Structure formats: C-alpha cells, structure tokens
Amino acid sequence: MISVQDIRKSYGSLQALDRVSFEVPAGQILGFLGPNGAGKTTMMKILTTFISPTAGTAKVAGYDVLDDSLEVRRRLGYLPEQCPIYDDVTVYEYLEYVAEARDLPADRLQQRLYRTLELCGLTGRVDQIIGTLSKGYRQRVGLAQAMIHEPDVLILDEPTSGLDPNQIVEIREVIKRIGREKTVILSTHILSEVQATCDRVVIINQGRLIADGTPDDLVRQMGSNDLVVGLKRSGCKLEEARELLGKLPGVVSVGEQRGEEEGTLLLRLGVGGKQDVRPELFRAVVERGWVLLELRRAEHNLEDVFRQLTTGK
Amino acid sequence: MNPKNIWVIFKKDFRSYFNSPIAYIVVVAYLLISGFLFFNQLLIPGGMQEASLRAFFSGLSRFFLIIFSPAITMRLIAEEKGSGTIELLSTLPVSDLEVVVGKFLAAMGLVLVALGLTVTYPITVSLIGSPDLGPIVGGYVGLVLMIGASVALGVMASSWVNSQIAAFILGFFLCLVFFLLHMVLPFFPDSMVGILEYLSFDFHFQGVERGVLDSRNILYYLSLIVFCLIVASESLQRRKWATA
Image (cartoon, rainbow over all chains, first blue to last red; front, side):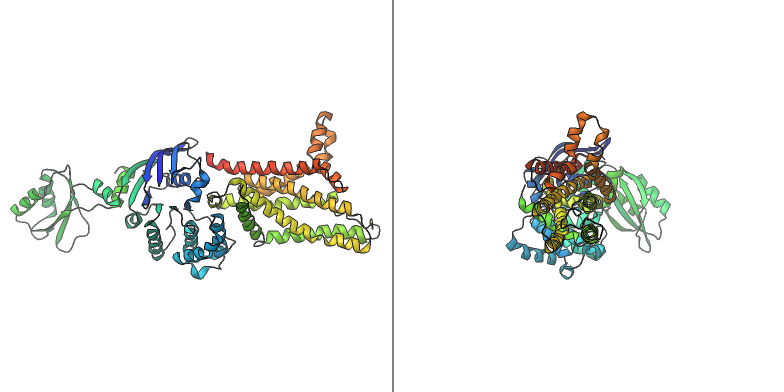
C-alpha cells in the first residue's frame, strides 16, 4: 500500500532523511518510532505530499507522491502534529467542509459525518466552536477529519500527544478498529503505544532507518541471554554471590536487580555469547549450599531496544 | 480546475469572514466613508449638488477601497501558513490554484456585499433627479474590476508571508504602487511613461468610468488578476522544496 524507496530530504546542509526505504502492506498498523528530530514528521509530510523529497520515490496505493499528488491525497487521511485545525468554526461546520473537499457524495455525507462523530466520541460537541474545545476533544476532531472519508491510508503524527490516559486508551481503540481494514502509519515516542497498537515498528534515528520488525521481533533480537537470579538472603552475602557468579564461564557482568522481595537477593547477570549458563549456575549455587529461589531470563522491553538503538548504549 | 473544489474553499472562507469582526468592520467603515463622500456632494450647500455618483467614484473614494482590499485579504493565506492549518489544506485533494482562486472569490464576495449595499446611492440619486446611467453602470464595473485587481494583489502578498500584519502592509504597498503610478509619471523618462501609464489603475479606470466599456481596460484588470493568482499558487508550491 505504501512503498518508500531511498528517500532523502535535506534542508540546506541538514540531512533530515537519509536513504530511507520501507514497505507497508495493506491492513497493517505501522509504528514510526524515533527520538525528537529523527525525521518522523518529515517522512510523514513527504508521504502526504505536503513537502517533496530531495531524492528517492515514495508511492501510496501505487501513486507517486510527486507525479500523482492529487491521487495520493484522495486516498489519504492525515493528522499532522499539533493538530492544526481552524479555531473559528464549529465541529460540524469543519467536518462538513472537509467531507465536501474530500468529495464525499452529498447523499452519504450526513450519514458518514454522524458515524465519524460517534466513532470519535464527539456526538455531544457537534455545535461547539473548535477554539473552545479542550485539547483532548480538539485531537478527536483532528482524528475525525482524517478518517471521515474512509481513506485507504491513515497517517497520524503523534495522535495521542497531550491526551490524558483514558483518552489515550480510547483513541488507541479507534485506531486499532480502523487498522483492521485500513493501512495506518502513526508516529510516536511513547513506546508502550507501539506495543499496544502496532503490528510493526520502524525505528529511525538521525534520518536513518535503524530497525524494522514486529515489536516482539525487535525485543527478541535485542534481548540477549541475560539472566535474573534470586538467592535466599540468609547464608549468602552479596559480595560472595557476586564473586561466585562472576566466575562462571560466559558471565560478563553481575549487577543488582531492583524489585527484590524481602529475604531475596536479586542479581542480574550479563551473559556474553549465546551459551546457556543456567546448568553451571545451578550447580555452583548448590555446591555453596545457597538456596536458589528464582532463575529466569531477563526481560527486555521496547524501551531498552529504543535506547540501545538510538544512543548506542 | 474543478469548480466544485473552488466552491468548497469559497464557501469556507466566505463563511469565516462573518465569524470574525473583520468583515463587519470593513463593510461598515466603507459604507460610512463612501456614504459621507456621496451625501456630502449631494446635499451640502457649496458642494457639487448634482445628481451623479461622481464623488462616490472619485479618486478619494477609490483610495479607501485600496486600503480595505488588503485588510480583507491579509488573513487568507498568511494565517493558514502562520497557524499551520495550511498543512491540512494542502493535503486535501484540492490543487493550490483552486485554493487560491476560491480564497480570491471569497474576498470578492465580501467586496460585492459592501458594494451591493451602496446601490442605495444610485437609487437616491434617481429619486431626486435624472442621472446619466452610463457612468453609473460603468463606474460600478470599473470599481469591481479595480477591486478585483487589488484583492488579487492582496492574495498574492498574503501567500508570501506568515503573518497577517506583514501581508497587510505588503498588499497595501503593492496596491498603492498601482494606484499612484499615474501621479509619478513626470519623474520617469518618456520612453517608460507609456508602459507605466498602461500599468496604472487610474489609466484604465477613467475610460470605464465615462461609461465606455473598452475590452482593453477589462483585459488589463483580468490579466493582472490572473497573474497575481498564478504567482500566489506558485508560492504555495514552494513549500515543497523549501530548505528551511
């Protein structure tokens, strides 16, 4: 549905995007992830034809963003960052304007309008002037204008920014519902959002694409053999435990792990390579007469992956 | 160009004029000033006291239109650029030229409302005397064309900047140049006078005002309008390649 090939965009001497390529099949929700200033918004502006790439090609539904800009726009719904919509009209007037500009036939317009208002939870606000809406409702109007014409592709730039936790959950539900049939690209730097809504993640940093895969894949790729070990505190000192475990073949670091229960000494072992150190570890602990309460693989989350990829730590 | 798209843009912008005080201020101020000029000539002893709209079409009266035109066009594009709404506007399936034309027509719509309210002047005149209709019709046609050109200049100015104030000053300056050009002709070498005179608003207004609808005058205003709107549409396109 969306195909991006070697896209570059430079603003003067600043390289905002550097040879970015990816494909998004129909019906996928793609999370666009990256620190602020990584190039997420620039990529979205290119896909929505608002700005043009310096080099490379981008296609939406088979139409080139440069050559068939109008055809691309017909198939898109777009919610820009900061939700720039007119303040001096009512919710109804604004959505009607967008629906007409988006060529919604007159006989379907009313029905579609009310359906969208309902879906975005705006039913009670129809006649309110947009400038007087709270940030959450304003964001919903932005979402409503993006999806009123049932576009094949929905591009949302930080759709949940500035919303409270309840609203975030609601908006995510709306996005997921749309994503069952439509292609959605959303950008965010909230990682739990990606894990909660997206089928696939693309991480960009400093204009380059640095990772591409399902959220689980990425976590697994990055996840190493690190282990968490829980020892019974009585009869075992921290220093001794550090020393013993540090000597095990394959273990490169021993650190304390937070979240321990009363009477348990939790340690995190950094394991180099792919070897399984668990049998060795078990034997060593038992030899010393310590009690092993817990032994599990350390969990990685997307947060770790993100930090690791974008800062190299 | 798709007329339906132009209509959608026109409707939105024309409507939002009446959601803000600008439209009311401009229309009322114009009616007060033109009304004063008109009745001053008609009724005040020592004035012309003739049954015509000569004062209403006078240079002074037209000068106020030159001020009001950029006042109603200043927000059209500059505000969209300043507030970021241009991003949603430009990603609608509507071409930049359709956007510009729709906005131009919305401003013209407001101007026509103001001018429409002045038909009370010719009605008054025909009640108390028997005015020559030619100059009146010609005068109105001339006004609409001249305002059309100044509104188009204002739209063009609005497309160049991000702030309404800058758009107003720039638009006013452009209109003023075209409006005053015929007064500064003596300062230019003879070889240039012909061209500069041809470019001035006044040169083309005089003929129309006398009730003579010369196609060359109409063509002048229309080509200026088309030129400004195309430049405005091109300057909207420029965002795509901007490097800042």
